[in-house]
Length: 120
Image 1 (cartoon, helix red, strand yellow):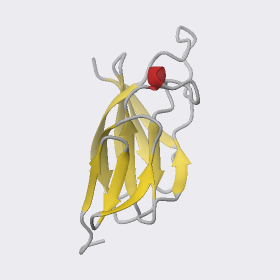
Image 2 (cartoon, rainbow, N blue to C red):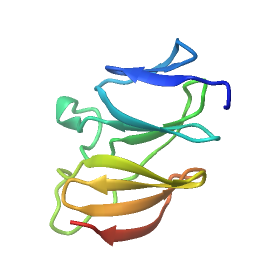
Image 3 (cartoon, helix red, strand yellow):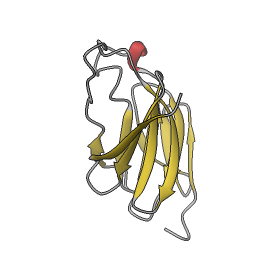
Image 4 (tube, helix red, strand yellow):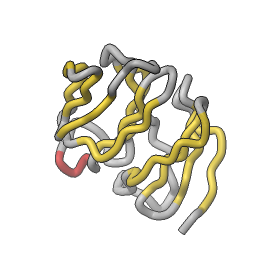
């Protein structure tokens, strides 16, 4: 990973200037890890293919999707709580923050939620 240049433009992720993955909706943010790339997409109101609150993916450097964040589900939500920000914790995890102010600590290897806190 040390010699890799990872960027994005619109809906596409590039590794060393080569397009490796294109999504259906625009990319908002990426985080780079030794194991791959965490990707935050604009909320899915643009696309009915996915739930609005499953807009975080993790891919390897060849563009293969390793996992997609799973719907957490709160009793008061109806799939309209997209993730709006990512913050790297360390090489093994990152925080994914939702529109309503919840932050979830995500395991990079599995995509599992390992902690949560209300931050708003």
